[in-house]
Structure formats: C-alpha cells, structure tokens
Length: 169
Image (cartoon, rainbow, N blue to C red; front, side):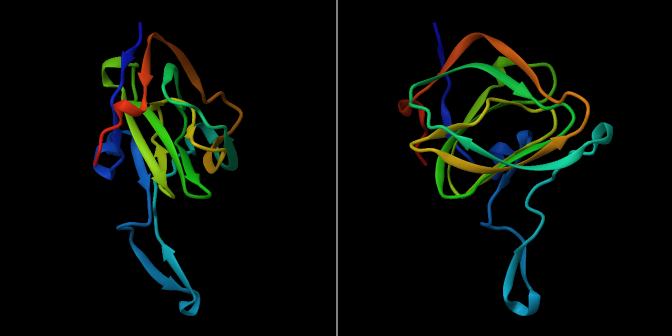
C-alpha cells in the first residue's frame, strides 16, 4: 500500500535544505557587453570538484510521466551537485530528502513550472527527473570523474504523487 506524498509549490526558502532554486526572479543582475546583454549572476552553487571531479554539461530529455505516479526509489550524488535547468517552459516534479542516511520521514515533493531550475546539493537524495505534460529538455550540470557518483535505494514502501495532492498557492 502506498503512502500519499503532498506536493508543495517550490520556493527558495522551502527548497533551501536541498540546494538552490534557479530562477531569474530576484536574482542579482547587471548589464555587460556594452549594455547589450543582461547578466544574471551566480544563480547556483555548483559543487563538483570532490575527488578530482570536473563539471559536465549535458542535456537530459525527460519523457512525460502521468499522475498519479509512484515513487519507489531515490538516488543521490555523494561527490557533487546536480543542476537541472529547463530549456523551455515546462512542468515537472521534484522529490527530495536531506543528505545523509536516507530518512523517508523527511521526503518532500515540489511542483516546478516555467523556466525555473533546481540544483541538488551534494548528497541530497532525489528522484530522477519527473517531467509532466510533454517531452522536456533540461540543461544538466553535474560531476564527471573516474569515481562512481550515484547511489540508489529502493524505498520500503511506495509514495504516491497525484494531482489531488498538489498544494494550491
């Protein structure tokens, strides 16, 4: 029997224990290149240098998932952060738990839409990409190196995400 996991709207404050919300809203910005370009500065803490790692820039193409959806596993990257930035406006879900030993009582789910991205801090437990509605491309910045950087676990029981569990803002 699955347990229901309430889906919250994402905010910088609510997501802070898990990493960064990447958005231009409220970001420090200033003109560069003779005023022809606006730079939105230092949007996330990219942490990939542990154990000789280097930054990888990738595109992940997420296939849409239908709700209700059951979360049955989680993963983490103990040697580096992982940022997901949508390349077009999209809707997706983020399921996370704090870094450290996995504690299912700490699971949280967030609804993200538009061009807002997320950066999972090093070691934060998260579910793989959950795109909604349509195929979605994400620019992903994460760690490359010779050492394994992905731990996966199966949950003792599934957690159900459904449209009825989405909090209204």
